Image (cartoon, rainbow, N blue to C red; front, side, top):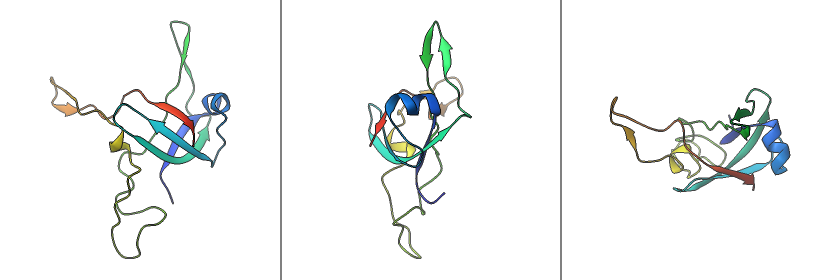
Length: 109
């Protein structure tokens, strides 16, 4: 991928006025990132107790040494990455960090 992206359901994109290929901001209690919107029908809304819940996808292992603006032949640290959003908590039973599920807000950037 040429740049950091956020995959989101078409229904959520329509609700928020986000277009495929446009910029989207994702914010959690810990930080925010801006990426390219990848609007898809692969991620469907969930119905939980009558309420619509959306999931979005963000690449975890991306943007260390690549992306637009990366220096030729060198490594440039770029701030827009999933780690900016993730909580600093872990599962005490299996001793792994909880990086896969957390609450965020999504808006057109």
